[in-house]
Each structure stands twice: as C-alpha cells, then as structure tokens.
Length: 166
Image 1: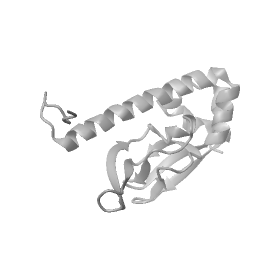
Image 2: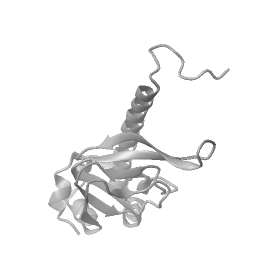
Image 3: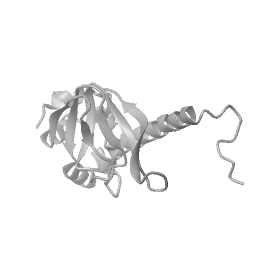
C-alpha cells in the first residue's frame, strides 16, 4: 500500500476522487529498479501497471531473428520519463507485455496490481472511463514516439517511400 498523496502528485491520476485515490493506493506499492535491470520482458503476463516517479526507463522491442542468426534482437523504441505510465498492457487484452523495460538509471515506480485494477475498472465506471482514456492517450503518444524512432532509424528522406512494396 502507498499513500494516496503519492497518486495525487501526478497528472495521470488527476481525475481520481479522494475515495478512488485511497482505493487505488491500497493495491499499489513503490518499487525501485537499479540501473541496467529489466523491470519486465516482452511476452510476460502484465501483472502490474506502473507509473514512473523517478529516473527513466528504456522500452525495447524484442524480435526473434530466426532468418539470419536464430538469436533475439533488441530494438530501442522509446523512453518513459517521470509521470508517465508503462505496462499499459495490464489494462488491454490479452494483458501480455509487448516491450521489455530496462532502467536507464536507478528508477522508482508506483506498481499497481493489474488484476485488482482491472477489477476496479469492471466495477467502477466513474473510474473506468477516465482511466482508460488516459491509457489510450498514453498508447497513442507511445505509438507516435515509436514512429519517430522508426523514421530516424531508416534514414528515409522526406517524401521518399520507406519501402518499395511493388
């Protein structure tokens, strides 16, 4: 359990009523991840929904390179900064993580039990709509950031097609 005051500090949770803050705080804890350590790996069940409070977390996309080397390749797709959520897959079916999160430096997070949070979403529509709207907004921001990383990695000039699909 964490203090409801901790949730109050972050705009992501700004929609919560005092009662909802207490309810969410009851299913949350603070965790610290040392620099270089993975918080979670792609393909794992999303057991927690996180909000980063200090530090930074790099998100990586793991790909099986079975055609060339037979090994896994890891591609950087973005960074999560304080005040931003991660492991949003905890609220999106099939509740499986799609990236690997590695602490770029020692990082502190609020970890909210995913199953309990999903239960709250199912039973409290006053909490569900604004929470899921925040998650959708975060997903769209992350998608846009990933697109920018992809364009930067390909080095494709303006106006040129990225791939010749003919």
